[in-house]
Image (cartoon, rainbow, N blue to C red; front, side, top):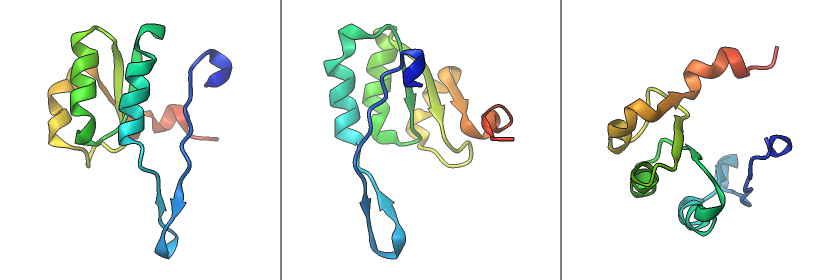
Length: 100
């Protein structure tokens, strides 16, 4: 993605008991989105987490939301349903994205 001009922000993760991986990015995504707000035309937000409702709503009102990509069509916050015209689901993109 970076080779095509996208800004990709990586976040360190923690390995919890049982091998679970935890990466808390909520506050950082919102803060980074607002810091960089004047620098981008449109944002693509990838989440199913309702904690980002206010960010997505603000981007939409400012005409800065390109797409909301939800990883799992069957499990995402109902707070995001109002953005359904702007949604795409990773489940539906599998054929295009999977390694063959």
